[in-house]
Length: 139
Image (tube, rainbow, N blue to C red; front, side):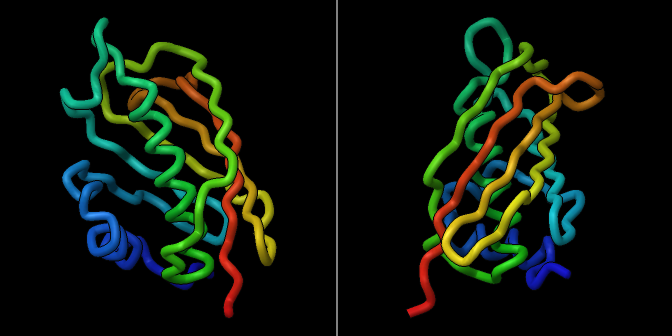
């Protein structure tokens, strides 16, 4: 059972990362191993050619996996990304992004998982990533 609710996580994000608050991130589902997010499309996310930019996709992966970990551990602001490997598979439509992260291993010092992103309304993913986070020790 997650120790932080979706509302708790978004409040934490607003308080500790106010630069992300304007993006309108929504948490659609959260359990012990999975988080599902929606990032509403905004013209700021577009790159030339009318597609969602790679940095926007990477931000969704990084932020989404961070929230998934916090949901399990509680408010650990200093958990940090140690590896993020992303494969861009298709051109993302200029539509909301749906991201789903899975926690594959949560250890004492590392969390490992994967993350898939779709354009809303499409069946085929636009990107897939593997992610590793370092978890600070409780000193």
